[in-house]
Image (cartoon, rainbow, N blue to C red):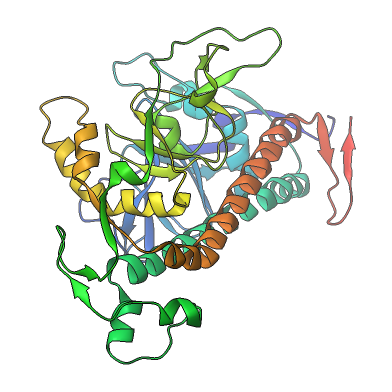
Length: 405
């Protein structure tokens, strides 16, 4: 690679300390605040102008993050300042490639220090090739981020529709008030709605609608106490899906399970998982095939769409989390009895089928986005080490192809 210069990190960048910040908001502000693991809130005054790169300094996990906009960094992380002509997004990918966030100085609290980073060697391409590399990898990350934003919008819409139909009973209230139609509901289904409410164990519900325990609308299969195993020679391994994997939505670097996991404990894209201990989360899984570990329920139903089960679990999450928080253990949890106590409203099948025309479609769109994002991430992860090492060269002018040395 004759055009790439041999250098060290200390010759190319400085790692600047973040600053202590007490009064940042978790809700809103003009400037994103970063900590050692990524975004943690908002403030109004930036510490650095974007684009910029943030590198975690202390903690078991020290992430690398890119900010296109002005940002603030607290004192558990660095922000990176170039000393030479460097494209900031290329620099972000270079730090990932060189695993600077995984350097450990051996102190009781895992830390990345300047003294450990600066002497390390790095090969630096010319600025135009840096920008070309950043364009290729950045385009993939930008599409992943666009998919995430779209998925969040779909989630807000789905939550609002479910709330309106099944919690606030807006179609029934509208009919009771003399309205002759309701948006997104077909006329025959609207005409069949009741106009009266009756008392139930959870308060007034539409006449003819049932109230059932959460445990009756779905089956909650608890996972297995899976052990870590070495990789199989044939590559037919299953990743163990634990609470941590559910929270990050990925099985990357997860433990490998025994290959003899019973079929009912194998999970795949689109399965509904519910962690009944720890922080308690309910999410559709889109991290590929894996094995269900203990502390997770695989939630299935032969009567109701999966979105219906998810929405009712999430309606009860605040109560479940309060129960878990009251446990005198390191990992609070709920029991199956709490699934019996949690009550849900079950409308006539025609209403659920009608809602499925919209909510089912939103769920399908979200699934497509999540699976596409995983494939894009796999492509990025495949290309990143090849581009950053120079094994694959990207043409320096826009629109040209990729060269292989």
